[in-house]
Every structure is written in C-alpha cells, then in structure tokens.
Image (cartoon, rainbow, N blue to C red; front, side, top):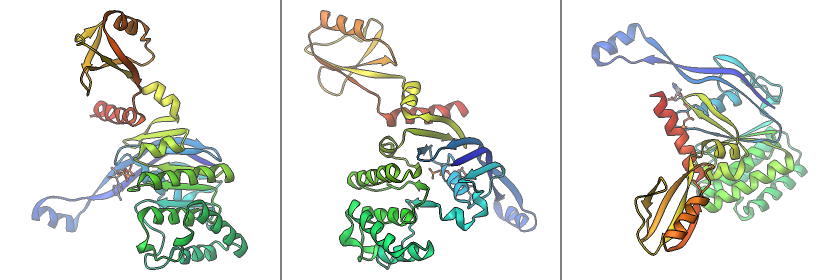
Length: 327
Ligand SMILES: Nc1ncnc2c1ncn2[C@@H]1O[C@H](COP(=O)(O)OP(=O)(O)OP(=O)(O)O)[C@@H](O)[C@H]1O
C-alpha cells in the first residue's frame, strides 16, 4: 500500500546575508543552503493499518505528508503508494487518497458544508444515490444532521472538523492522511472523531496515517507508531512494544501514618503531593515484592498503588533524550 525506500528530502533556500552590504551582495549572487528535512526514510504500510506519525516540531512529519500526496518530489529514494508514484499526481492516484489538515480547510467558508460536498461529488463523479446514502450515514454517525445548511463560518470548530472529515472520505479513499486533525478540539469532539475513524477503518479497511501532538489520538487509534526525530525514524513498531522498550519504570505511591526515611533497601523515597504520601520509583520490570513486604512489616501503611508512567511522558522522554544525545 505505502512503500518508502531510502527516501531523503532537502529544502533548498537562499542564504540571507546580514546588513546593507549583505543585501546588496544577495542581489547579484545568492548562496543556496540545503536543509535536510528527511533522511533515508524506509518503511512500508499495509492495507487497513492505522499508522501514527509523531515527532517534535520540525521533525519532518509535514514533509513526509507532502511527499505522500505528491506536493514535493524526494531528493533521493523511491515512493510507491497504491502502485503510483505520488509526484506524478495522476487523477487515478488522487481519487484514492483523502487528506485532512487540521490547520487548513477544504470547505468554503461562506457556504454551507453541503455545497462543498456537492462539489466533491461532482469532481469524483460519485453516483447521486450512493452519495446521498453515504452522506446521510456519515451525518448520523457524527450527529451533524441539522448543521448541513449552516454556513461553515458559523459552525463550531468541532463541527467544522467533522465536515472536513466527511469531505475527505466521501469518495471512498483507500488511504486517508490526517495532519493534526483534532487540533484545538474539546475531548468530546476528539472522541467523536476517533470513533468515526475507527469505524471507517473497520468497515472499509481504509489505511490511515495520522500525525498528532495529542497522545490521546495516538493511543485511541493506532497500534503502530513511527517516531520521527530530526528527519530520521527513531522507532517504528507496535505501541505496546514501545512502552515496554522505553518505559524506564513506574512509581509506587505509598500512604503511611508516619514519616518514611529518605531511602529504603536502596530505593530513594520522595515526598508525594499529599501529606504522608510517598513516591518510590521502580525500574521497568523490577519486582517490588521485597520492598512492599519490608514496608508493611516496618511501617504503618494505609495504602499503596502503582502509578504507570503515562504514554505521553514516555514519548516526551524519547524526544528529549534524542535531542540531548544529538546536541
Ligand atoms: N519550505 C521550506 N523551506 C525550508 N525549510 C523548510 C520548509 N518547510 C519545512 N522546512 C524545514 O524542514 C524541517 C521539517 O519541517 P516539517 O514542517 O516537515 O516538520 P514537522 O514535523 O511537520 O513540524 P511541526 O510539528 O512543527 O508541524 C524543519 O526544520 C523546517 O524548518
């Protein structure tokens, strides 16, 4: 379905010299600078997969999406999507993909969303009966039935994004690309969009590639995650596996009736947020049986529970560690 082989991409830009002399020099001879946004990217995705692409700002996510939709051509390497070279922008290829960009709208601002949808129907030559049935089905699913005649500018952000989604999938795309589709949305709208995407993926086997800075999106949707840092793939695989590999440890929260020392059996004890609560960091996979039995035998313990490291923190640690090791 998607195949990237040793794909690199560099943006070319002009070097701007400082001062009036520099500006004058620039008029006659401009120096080019190359910025490598993606370096040697190789991955494949199968039909029906939901693949999450994450990375810090400037990692190269949007560049990868631009390559996928054929807006730019790789500097080196090969891309094949659904048997096409995206850069050739053949109509046959474009009719099989859908794109949602959270920061850009494909709906006409002054008109009701239904008008844009009719335009899309005409462009993709969707059969009228099929279009009406599919549209009604989606409108019901996303609870938008009474919003079709409202001008887009009067819709809430959540309603608009739902219409954006419908506009990008009404023509039965085999591949749906979503760039920050839930940006700025409340949790309810985010959840509605997750539900819709999972439903589409299950019923139509739509392959989905999503980028998001919200780890909620990633956890709700994808089994596979690809982490892009400085234009390179740092991790590509199962999300659960990622947690097992990169989670440094979990924290036990202990509540006591009395003070605890700074260290027990070699474990550092930190004060928790509440009175007489304590945090003890355990290494991943470490057994805590001995520690708990020591605590219960030697102190008055009220309760204890394990706090797993949130997925978001694990991803954040991967981002910062890579940054530190490359600087
Ligand atoms: N048109 C351009 N000309 C020159 N450099 C560019 C251009 N577009 C992007 N870049 C650079 O390429 C790198 C990758 O940018 P890209 O937009 O793909 O990152 P991103 O992962 O999508 O970031 P974000 O999460 O902030 O959207 C960045 O260093 C960026 O400054």
